[in-house]
Length: 411
Image 1 (cartoon, helix red, strand yellow):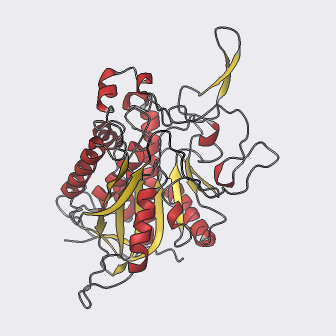
Image 2: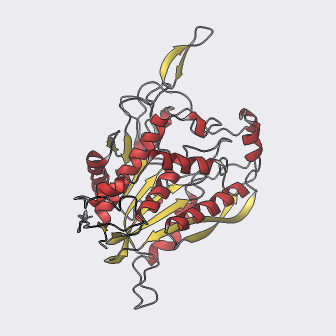
Image 3: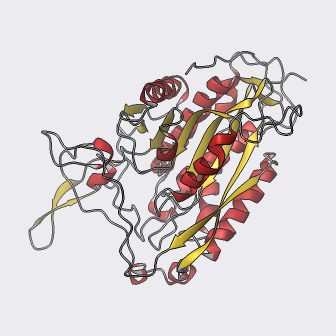
């Protein structure tokens, strides 16, 4: 996969942009990165938490989809679409369907983690909260009361597309999942990833902003049940790539996939659990209370996928973009991408996932105690946490801008 260089620099800017009165810059990517603001990012996450944990199949999930679509349209990303698919929710107590065997993992450092990883160091248990009574906030308990109906019913993914000016038949996918679980607000998992994608859709849709290649901003559903929304998209759309329809129209309903960039929980990198003494004197392990100074944005690809070589190049391109444009936190590259919506794509197109921690080795070892818990609420996080998510947004915006060929049209 070739990294597409930025082909044009701006000479002036459209009046509606906040930077309209500035002198002509030398780097349009830096100009757009500055449009990412902490308070706007926080406000989008806060708005998503009004729908509680957005559990798939519920009215609060459907309401969140409607709100996301309306926001995308308000940003100027007006060509919104929905992909529909059927999902079957088994009855309580029904054995879960057997999944394919995981990747071989586990090395000298410790037991196996997911995605081919090894669990090093201190660990605490992880899991999904299924008890609404563990949520002490009665308002949230009531908001999250409706559970997914048993049986087969319709689900939807919502997305919008910025059409490329030179190569509309090719695109990069920038995505996150919008559903959550745990009887909290799903502020981090995955309000933080959803807000990141929405903020990028807003900025790339600003007047005067053009790209050579198309960018599709997708918010997946059913990630928490097994990546079903992303898998449905791949199944329905993979054979439509690059097909002009109608013939001679210059329109490509499904441009050829050049790269898939997925985002999940983005904000919490407090580090490995540390030992403390409880009231009885027993040693327990707890998460450090504040974001660590050495926090980073984790960029992962899957080394055993058929697209591993291209995925690695994509990951390192984003690592380089972070070096140049991120303001507070660095990025790190890993090769055990797992349990995320880029997985259904990884054997078809170069695919990466951005997270707050490595999914297998770190999240799997309990580095985020709010994961799928009633504590995953907006007020749980500090500005240091939100800032890590914003730096992930800076990383993706700059990485995609270089690949898609950004310019700001002179007027």
